[in-house]
Amino acid sequence: MKPVFRESCEKNLSETIGHWKHLHMHPEMATKEETTSRYISEALGRMGVPHSVGVGGYGVVGLIEGGSPGPVIALRADMDALGIEEKTGLPFRSVNEGVMHACGHDAHCAILLGAARILYDMRQGIKGSIKLVFQPAEEYSPIGGAPKMIEDGVLENPTVDAMLGLHVWPILETGTIGVQPGPVSAASDRLRITVKGKSGHASMPHTGVDAILAASATVVALQQIVARNVNPRDTAVITLGTVKGGTNYNIIAEEVFLDGTVRTFDDRVTSMMPTAIKRVADNTCKAYAAEAVVDYRPGYPTTLNDPRVVSVAQKAAVELLGAKGLLTGLPVPAGGEDFAFFSRRVPSAFAWIGCRPKGVSEADFPALHNGRFVPDEAAIPIGVEYTVLAALGLLDELGGK
Ligand SMILES: [Zn+2]
Ligand SMILES: [Zn+2]
Image 1 (cartoon, rainbow, N blue to C red):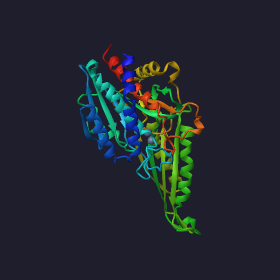
Image 2: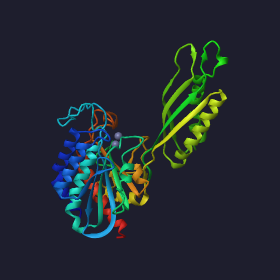
Image 3: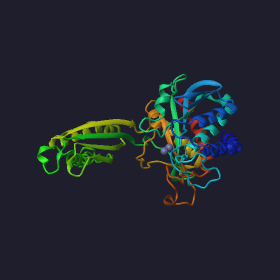
Image 4: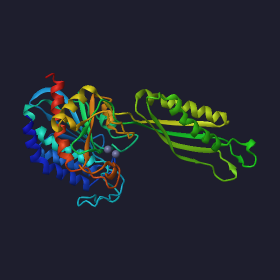
């Protein structure tokens, strides 16, 4: 059946690239994807794909029902852009000042629209159903857009058995796909600590409780959690990005606010962090007669790739790009990804689609969230074909074929 997809992909390529360029030109920030949502809805409407809008905000959900019953899978693309000034100089650069598709979510939507057309056209031969999940607010950390879609029932009616997601990945060369089991994105939590002391005259420290001294000791002590409480085979990052406190040079500070982020890659480490941080902050501050008020907010968990779904995704990558095109055992990035929430509900595979043009070195190619980032256009048809192959492979696998 492969040549059929190829032909179909090539035929629809200019339409898919057109979607990408249109979306790139009209980026919208997380939770504000109104015109993006309308554009996607209209594109699905022209194809004839039944769909719902307004799912978890500006989410759009299409449903392709196959000719015969079978498992249900979902394919997800995120829709939102970032508050970054575009510096690509592209003819189709952003017309919305200060907003840019710098994370490639425009490419993800175009890829899913391209795959939707092919899968919809061949639906008679498909056993099972395919949900197309266009998700808003991926960049809306620590809340994200996926939980709202889940709340709105995106994984029900019909119940989704497995899910696929992808991200264009500038570290990897075009013509390669990275997909591997286990965690593939970091858990990203928010940490705020208020250190409370007692103000006094700078010349009479014995009459006050110095919140700055207690906070300084706390900042240092927190790093010992990574050094002494985390298994050396695991990793974690505790970063306090801001320290704010004190009112004047000659007054002992009454309050200090610490604000930071915690990144972890393994559920055991993720779950021990709030308790360990509270213990260290409380007791360190106590040693200085101060008080710590810890506000720990869990954000995106790690995206967890299921081995069975991954093996189907890997087969699709090899079929498309050959054995050399599949990359595994790649280092897990410290960034968060809210596909994580889906991956915790249904067995999933999240793949990295190489989008660095051949011959361009990693050092010379802009990273995600950079004002000069543009994925290689050649990565888009690869994304489409991979999505189609992996979706059909997954339906076969789950259908017991
Ligand atoms: Zn991003
Ligand atoms: Zn992204």
